[in-house]
Amino acid sequence: MKRKPIYVEVEIQASIEDAWTYTQNPTLHEQWDLRFTSITYIPKKAPEEPQRFTYVTKLMPGLQVSGWGESKGEHQKENGTKTSSLHFGTPQKISPIAEGKGFWQYIPNDCGLTFLTQYDYVTRYGKLGVFMDLFFRPLIGWATALSFDVLKRWLETRENATAQYRRFFLTMLMSVLFSFIWIYHGLVPKILAVHPQEIMMTAPFMKSAEQMVVWIGVAEILLGLCWLYPRGKRRLFGLQIIFFPILTLAAIVADPTSIIAPFNPVTFNLSLWILSIIGFVLSKNLPSAKNCKRKRG
Image 1 (cartoon, rainbow, N blue to C red):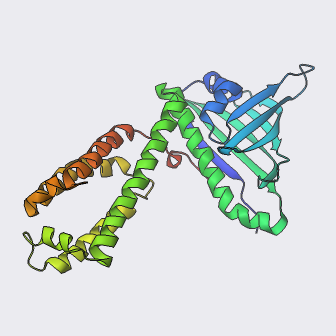
Image 2: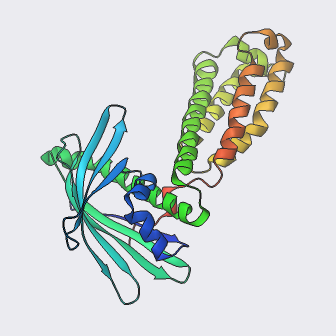
């Protein structure tokens, strides 16, 4: 089956000159492009030579991929459209990409410009590499689209790329935490163990307390799964800002002695309430790969 090249397109309310600077200057480029940690231009020996560079992508502490790239040429049409072609690759065996080619295009419009890229690459490791690419290609496509939206916001709102990524990944980290908390508390003490304390907390409000605990556990698991959905984080944070004080009050009413226990509902829910407020603030206008077009046309 023929692989489709990666395509990403975004509308930016900025001038082509600004977009060109932020994408062709390596110091700026490495800040917004999630695919690269650092980019270093190699000085040209002659003006007509293509611009060569090296890049490094840090995957985790102590593990990185380094490679090479070459700007094969630049072209400008009469209508102001600019195109920059690229050839890239890496000799490192840890990378599923051997080498590839693509281009960036800057198309002027009434509101600013359309910025797009299309690229493809050759994988290594034969059929194993082709299989690995079934998972790697969507990931690198997502990273490209997220990076394009970060660039768009940097040019339009002047919020720098570092601040955007900090907000994005902190929000994702808190989302995983809340997902684990809700799924764990729904599954373990309410469904698997049906803990007596859970029944005691529900009994003052419900007649069939044991059955109700199980249904509450199911609801909590569903809420935990909602945290794994890519969008709508701010609504979930807002819901929890309202929800945690109610849960705390209900726990105290059901068992007033719980407030003197270690790791009691007051301190635990207060911590989650504060985290929800922080998440609500951080998650406003998060960058998203969903804001980019991923297909031509």
